[in-house]
Length: 210
Length: 86
Image 1 (tube, helix red, strand yellow):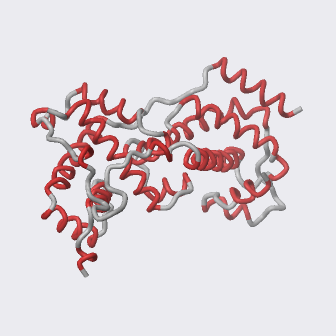
Image 2 (cartoon, chains in turn brown, yellow):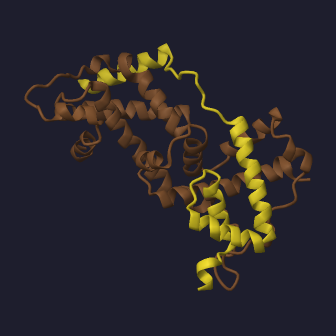
């Protein structure tokens, strides 16, 4: 835990740095009794734009408060209470992403291309894109398409959905997503690649196929 | 030499996906262009992928409503925090 907090201290924004140089004069204090009232909604909103799941977001906020309590003695008062809690929260989100990335998900990868042999990288016959209905393709404003799209996104494995939603719905920059989830840019593009393949297929089956 | 210019469908669709966000490099776009010239299947994929992007832009938007813990949830959370403080 000490290491986690230590690391997170260095992720504070630039304007916090001047305070960081004057540790003998702490400006801020912690008041855990007031955390829920003062910060829970803010932390909740911060989390939901990253994990796209209300229950999970609530759990992460709770975990953040608990970790904060344990780590109180590490607080030096250079950053505001909220900034300090956010730094803990950020680690929680990365930890969550690591967890889903390593356990689930591997078995859920659907293969679209030959994995080896002479035809490595060519389309598998059954995964070749089918012809789409021209009319349906022209009518992307259709409100029912919105429903189909949303349910296809909901069906993505969590590790793909989180990244896809951060990129396409929340419009985070690639670099920001990489920092927030602790992944590299090439990881991110592999995830986006697979997510979009699955989405294309899902919409083909449920909406666009003739 | 040929490997430099010619990529397989897996690589081509990966670049195609990156390009939907305008983040493919010039060299990647050249390789994709060459591949699309010779591969009908990926041409179709690429077209459908553009449709997918349009559908996303049309229908997916940030939810601007604020998320809040309910009063009850806050009470429960507060109790848990206080308990942990002891």
